[in-house]
Every structure is written in C-alpha cells, then in structure tokens.
Amino acid sequence: MSWRVGTVTAARAETASARTLHLVVPGWPGHLAGQHVDIRLTADDGYTATRSYSIASAPSGHELEITVDELPDGEVSPYLVREVRPGDKLELRGPIGGWFVWRPSSPEPVQLVAGGSGLVPLMAMVRTHAREHSAVPMRLLVSAREPDALIYRDELAAMADDAAVEVTYAWTRRTPDAWPAPPARIDAELVSKSTWPVADAPTSFVCGPTGFVETAAALLTDAGHDPRRVRTERFGPTGGPR
Ligand SMILES: Cc1cc2nc3c(=O)[nH]c(=O)nc-3n(C[C@H](O)[C@H](O)[C@H](O)COP(=O)(O)OP(=O)(O)OC[C@H]3O[C@@H](n4cnc5c(N)ncnc54)[C@H](O)[C@@H]3O)c2cc1C
Figure 1 (cartoon, helix red, strand yellow):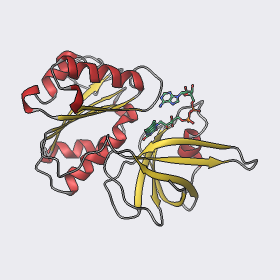
Figure 2 (cartoon, rainbow, N blue to C red):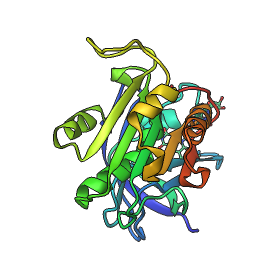
Figure 3 (tube, protein in one colour):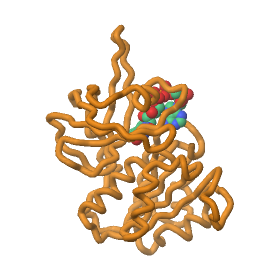
Figure 4 (cartoon, rainbow, N blue to C red):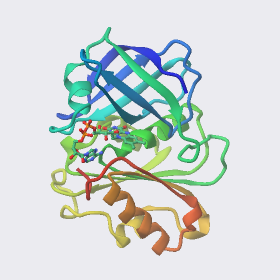
C-alpha cells in the first residue's frame, strides 16, 4: 500500500488533550466506517515514526478526519495534537482494516462499546448511520474518565434529541453534576442494562485501550453474545479508560 501526502485543512480541539485534524488527500480511494490510517512522521535526520489512527469521519470523497489523544511521553501524538497546523502536509497510507468495519447495508442491530479515544472509529459508524438515515438499531456505551475528557461530547449530547443512536455513559473518575450514580467502570450490570439483548443478535464493535477492550468483550461474551459477533480493536497497552 503506497504512502500518500495529505494536507491538514483544519484542526479543532476536542478536549484538553485531544485534537481532530481534517485532511484532504489527493487520490484517496475512500474508506469504510471503522478503518484506520497509518501516519508516518520523518525527522530532519531521516528518522521515521509510524502510528495508526482511526478515521473519525463518515466516508466523504478524498477527505477524512482523525482524532488524536495526546500521550504526554509519546513520540507521535504530542506532535499531532500540539504542533501540526492547517496547511501542513502529513504522510499517510490506508485505508486499513477489513474486519472492524460497519457497512450501512448490514441489517443487524449494532452495539458500540468505547473506552476513551476508542470512540474514534465508533464515531465514524455513528456518523455514517446518521448520514445514511439508517434505520438499523444502534446503541453506544461509552466510558470516559469525566465529562471534560469525553471527545465529541456536544455531538453525542445533540444526538440524544433525535434518539437515532441510544447513548449510555460510564464515568470512571468524575460524573456530571446530579448524575444518579457514583463513578464506575463498566460492569455486567451496566452491560445488561444498556446493550442489546443476546436474542437480538447484534454485531458489537468494542474499541479502546487493550485492557478496556478485553474487559468489555468478556462482559459481552459472558452475557451470552456470540464471540464471532464481537469485533474488537485495541489501541494500546494501558489498562482502563484513560
Ligand atoms: C488500529 C489502531 C487505531 C488507533 N487509533 C487511534 C486514534 O484514533 N486516536 C488515538 O489517539 N490513538 C489511536 N491509536 C493509538 C496510536 O496508534 C498511538 O499508539 C498513540 O497515539 C501513542 O503514540 P505515541 O507515539 O504518542 O506514543 P509512543 O511513543 O508509542 O508511546 C509512549 C508510551 O505510551 C504507551 N502507549 C502507546 N500507545 C498507547 C495507548 N494507545 N494507550 C496508552 N498507552 C500507550 C507506550 O507503551 C509508551 O510507554 C490507535 C492504535 C491502533 C493500533
């Protein structure tokens, strides 16, 4: 797969540590919701660093968005979050991934489970669902540290009005004011209350830090979901939602 050069045409902050970059990529073949790109940075001395970033946007010609959450000691993410400016060029290749994708033509109910920045590829599915005016039932269970750490917070809140996608939040460190429950990680009770019943045979997409994905996927299969219908994407090595 060849490397292409995209131009950053806009950048917007999502949280104190996460930023969305809008890219225009000549020759981009298009993508499916759930796929990712590899981004390659090259230093003046020729040293390169390559990292994967999920595509956040619904398919849209030769444009795409990524959302990067900064790891303070990271090699690549601080540059993408703090340094890159509109007009800058980035080398990327993709789209990558054929399993962790949602096609609007799939009739099964969809269960999305996100931890932290694992929301990014699932948001591409939510946005594709909205753009296609899909009648496929879709639910999202999203775990974040606290309201200020939730990417796409306003967009998700706005979706509550039209209820096309049902969203349930799990706050792990601090809840919004007047929230009915204390902070907690997702557990069997929340999964059983907020996700599609096994009898509905949903396809589930689980994404986030490795430990989160393992926990959430195990909760779904322990609840009786067919493991072949639980698709997972692991972003990295840490345990719980960041
Ligand atoms: C398929 C795929 C899709 C991804 N999509 C996104 C995305 O949409 N948005 C996004 O922000 N990131 C995403 N990631 C993670 C991303 O590829 C990088 O791993 C992340 O940005 C850290 O890179 P870095 O160079 O800043 O840190 P590094 O220099 O690689 O690592 C710094 C330190 O952080 C640890 N670390 C590395 N990655 C993670 C992680 N994900 N979580 C916790 N600790 C980590 C390392 O072990 C190391 O100790 C994705 C990863 C994969 C595999």
